[in-house]
Length: 335
Image (cartoon, rainbow, N blue to C red; front, side, top):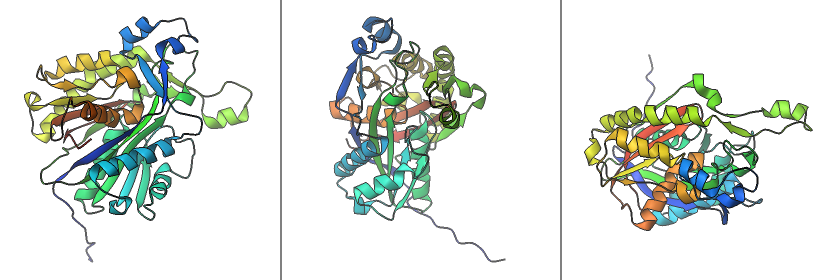
């Protein structure tokens, strides 16, 4: 029997840089409360959110991804010619086809490289990061961009008191490539489709097209169900990621969970038994929940402010729609 040849690539793969894009428009809790019976204090107490960013009408998930990628490349000292592939993870590329990744690659001037979209809800960045690292280790690419990008604001029912204050817009990208040391641990991922309705689009596009004068689709969230699932299940996911990477909780310098709810993340810190001085990302306070973009945006914020530094050992945990999750241990990149 003729054997099929395989390839192999870099043994040690890590994050070379991160770049973030945040839309200009800042939306306060008071502005949100113009549509619902609530208050800035109520929203902040229950979610940890004070402000969030909404994209302009002429901005899209793809255009924000492109800008984030440009900044990540600049921070890595690389150009588009140095990139072999782009993975875009998003829930809000509002075209069934073509995918966003080839469009982003072309906008960067990296025509002809591999590119694909990946959708796994708010866990998408972890899935995409794992896919890129494995492709590089397998020899399918040498250097890749992974970008989380979301334009969630058009999906929000501003009169839905259950979630209109949560979601927001933004994008952040990382450059993934060979490093002198192992910089990305194994990905621990999974899903619980029995709870798929906990975060969902309430009306599919075909149904809406058949009755365009009827209610339009919005994202709906069963907050208490998601809170319980994340707060009590993601601790185990984080421990499995640390075990897979061969590190202990007391060796983690930085914790970057999905920025869904700061109260969930406070419980996760206790559950994981991290060091008291471990840095915990809290980008949600001024960025809101940007789904697949939240983890790289939070990483960028920690590096920009100096709260974390390149080389720090970080635990990433993404969780959300699906219900899906993905976690890994990484070394923090350059900002």
